[in-house]
Image (cartoon, rainbow over all chains, first blue to last red; front, top):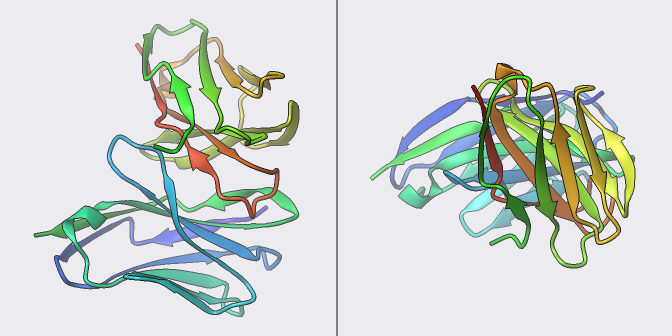
Length: 112
Length: 114
């Protein structure tokens, strides 16, 4: 089955800095890579996703990059704000497996 | 608000007991997923139902079972509870069965086993 490793487990940055969270996956058949944000006391929420036919996708201050050869993908948040503080989960899946496999999460803390 | 509702919000019970967690998916979503979230294990997929039928099974213990009813709401039954079952249990829903579908998560049920 798929195995997703996520690093770091905790990331502390100053407001305005950039933050990068990295994930690796094991199954070369995986072709869909969503990122979820979980705020305190809430369920995870999809913030961006990427499919294997593109190498990068941006949405305002967040971007995701994918390297299929190396089997890793990353979440980039620029100009971080205190409201970006949350736990971020990466996941990997394919149409053939109904369930994406989640990483263990990264707790991002943005200090004002 | 994701549109997914879960009840109860909190549940405190004793070891050996049985509990039922309830989930109502977003309107129109046919797929329901159950996850367990504990501090050291992250988000662990338990089971998925699609339009009333079991679709996929993850790391679900034999003491746990689930079902999806004709009105598409789902229940997760946890029996012979142990201290280690204390966790947040999330339900998520999506329109279809594929992992390409965005999953919409409910607010979770926090289970405490004493």
